[in-house]
Image (tube, helix red, strand yellow):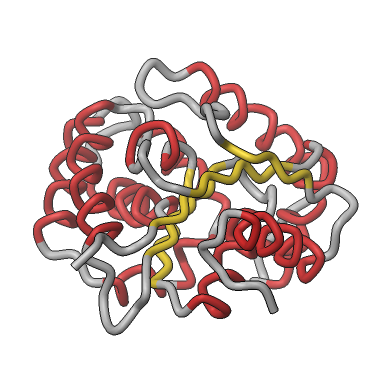
Length: 223
């Protein structure tokens, strides 16, 4: 049996990669893994169990525990969407042992998607560069920092969480800097990636642009 197809989507926070990944997954009947939620799950547990803010070894232990007993349902916790957890995830994701513990989990999901999925779609920050470098389709989804901060502020407010645009914009800038400059698996475009700027696109328009790119690869038949 030939290997199942894999789509790798990378990009910064609130750029629209999750929206695009979910939309494509529905159309293609692909299994979808929002890999950032793995780091958020570890980050949330780390906030609860750490001795102090420098205690990254606890994060590594938690990441290995998640890898050993992973269930996709664990990522449905609404608390993973909080800004505090997002910031914790950004910190612990720069720790190499954390990334190593979660790497094989992501690769296994890619080649063995659950259920009757026809393939797998993973979105994150190092999917095309590290997790699935041989994926036949790679997308890099982004938007301006201002647009991303606006989207993130609305998301947090819709969850009933306190957030101001100015605060979120500063956090977006700080997180972008961490993601771009970390020594292990920095956020970057990779050879073969197609960039989609969603700054002036609606959610459906963004999905349609991505599907057009996929159709041109012949992974998805023309309508």
